[in-house]
Length: 105
Picture 1 (cartoon, rainbow, N blue to C red):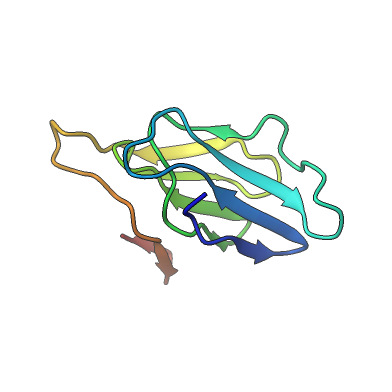
Picture 2: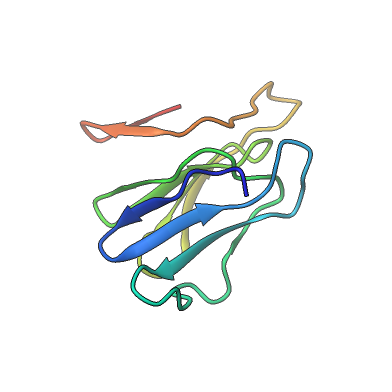
């Protein structure tokens, strides 16, 4: 794991994978006892190096070649994705920021 964990509302969010890894996941566990909140974890095609950001019941996280994801912070259900990839010239590893209803990467 390279991703810095994020703690919010009694949950710990943390991704896995390094730059060269594919097929990684974002995990959400209970901060008190480390039991899975999301089962299964959120699956990505690339890696999740940047620290997730929690805002307004959503978790925003980057996925390397996958671009930017938004999921429900409680269930892990995918809400949307801003796709990346070599053909678009988009590869995002850093942590996103959320302010005034916008997501910055």
